[in-house]
Amino acid sequence: MNAQHRSPAPTTPPTSASEPANSSWIPWLLVMVLCSALVAVCVGFLKVLDGTPASGALLSAGAAFGGTALLCFAVVPVVQQLRQRS
Image 1 (tube, helix red, strand yellow):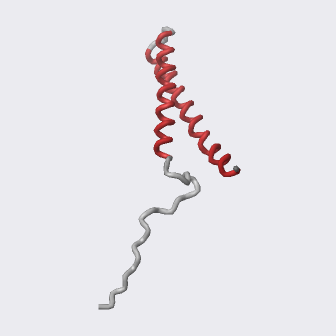
Image 2: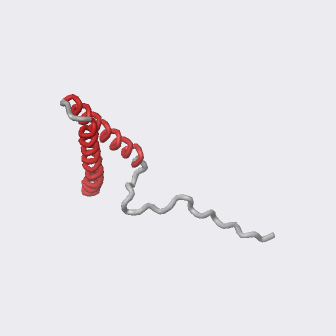
Image 3: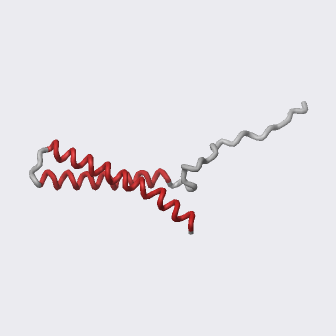
């Protein structure tokens, strides 16, 4: 009847250096994707108004989405580094 009680193992995995310290990564990711989609829709709409065929407008919208998403993802590590220096 002398059963030893062990404490349960921690359920949260250890955080790695690449993960942000706070838990607000998912909402920011959603904001980045929505911002990129908004830019892509605006570029596609402007290209259609200019008289570009649908394939060209879609290609331009995709490039705008990719460029905006890349810019958003590049800003996150820069802001994290600036916060660590302060």
